[in-house]
Amino acid sequence: QVQLVESGGGLVQAGGSLRLSCAASGSISGIYRRDWYRQAPGKQRELVAGISSDGVTKYGDSVKGRFTVSGDTAKTTVYLHMNTLKVEDTAVYYCKAVTVGAAYWGPGTQVTVSS
Image 1 (cartoon, rainbow, N blue to C red):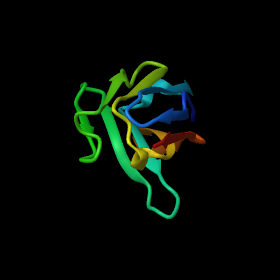
Image 2 (spheres, one colour; image 1 turned 180 degrees about the vertical axis):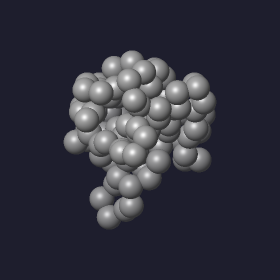
Image 3 (cartoon, rainbow, N blue to C red; image 1 turned 60 degrees about the vertical axis):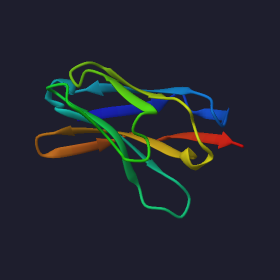
């Protein structure tokens, strides 16, 4: 079992920055991928960024060049650095950890970007 907790969300003006953290506990040695997703009201959950155990990262098209995922899947904390935030980035952000045969989600953290 893996437990995840996100933190760092809040209210920020457009153009600003935030850093989200995802802290993992439990059987973290089996994690081979850590992802960030977000879900805005009335919209489907979408992949924002991810990092695999070999260090390869990927990003959603809407955040490329603005967001950076950092950390190590084998370590407790992974970060999402969000720069040049836009109003449309407003959503609940979720952390996901993937092991062989299972995926785990955190409860989410709210990010609100004001104009």
